[in-house]
Image 1 (tube, rainbow, N blue to C red):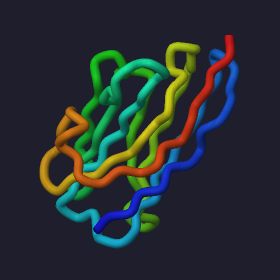
Image 2 (image 1 turned 45 degrees about the vertical axis):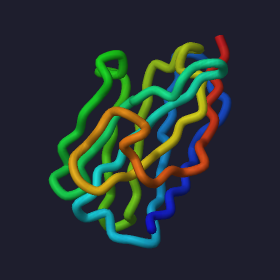
Image 3 (image 1 turned 180 degrees about the horizontal axis):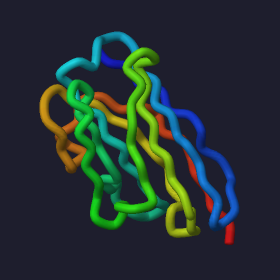
Image 4 (image 1 turned 180 degrees about the vertical axis):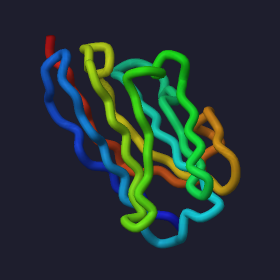
Length: 123
């Protein structure tokens, strides 16, 4: 059983940056992939980025390439999502999720979820 806890969200002005964290516990993430998703009000949960824990290969949604960076710290068992040049369109609850095996982009393919951290970007 993998427990995930996100943090780092908050209110930020457009043009600013944030670094979200996802702390994992309960099970080694070796052999797992961890993804970040976001859900804006009234919209479906959408894939942002994912990373293979063992090899570190990262994948991004086309709409997120360039402003989002996913990374991991194996020693801290933590995954990060750095976001720069934030815009009001980035306002959403951001979730991290884990699954054994290769990365996936659909929420239903992930087995473990955090509670989410809210990001609000003011114009």
